[in-house]
Structure formats: structure tokens, C-alpha cells
Image (cartoon, rainbow, N blue to C red):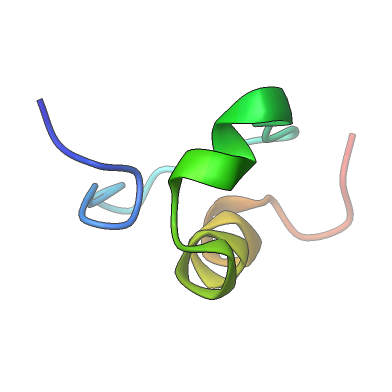
Amino acid sequence: MATFEAWQPVGRTFDTVIAAQARRRVDQVASTVKAAQVLRAGGP
């Protein structure tokens, strides 16, 4: 199992990223950048 920051999405994109309480256990800057990278342009 990998941390969210280390996870490699391999070209996948998503409509939504949900983190809730997990945000206090991960690097907030790195996780915000990673979430922005995997969100689909234009949204649902």
C-alpha cells in the first residue's frame, strides 16, 4: 500500500477526490497538488 502522495495514477483522471479526515495525516501541499493533477478538466 502506498501513501496518497506516492500513489501514481498512471494517466487516470477522476471527477471527484474525497479526502475528509485523512487530510490531517498526509502532506497537505503534496496531496492538494496530486488531487489537482488527477481531477478531470471541466468536472462532471
